[in-house]
Image (spheres, rainbow, N blue to C red):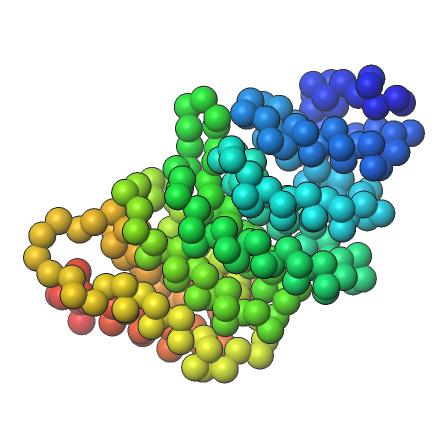
Length: 271
């Protein structure tokens, strides 16, 4: 099937069967262009859904590193939807690397981690949803990527926890309203589940949160502090209940206790 004749709406209607006969490098060129589209149907419903399916099925293994390189370059893209879908694509690529060892070289993951680590705590547009652009979800998508990086680069886990802390405490004027706190909490829990973290590494990132909240007093809760408290509440729940298929981290109790201690700042009545 020539690339020019790929009918994306038809593929979507059919559940995205892989278009046999289309060279992989030409297929990802098409998907790459669609993944920056301001049209959510093109970007999300078609391009991302197709890419996630085919990456997960191993259909794009021969061009996996190229897909990751393109996504990583988009962390500095001028358009928000391009930046916020980059971590989603990286999550898929990294997950494929876990499922198929050797599919993602560690050097490539390290190369992608650098621009991701700069972008995630600093992204200024953290709206979950835009009526024109559809889902943006920088916080949630970035959190998903953080958990994926932790599986492939376990030596980065302590840094990834600090990135999540810097993201939740970033001085923004927008409150989480699309369950971003839960997605961040899930990511932190998954990072804590990676073997090898010391007790100090598992809890050390909370010093970022404590420092951000120093000097707070009476008056309205600023949006960034609301985001921080919401995330810590969600994290406490995750560390109490665990994840359905993954259970509880080894340091769950220690992290939950420190999160609860911070939550006593706004909720002084907690036992």
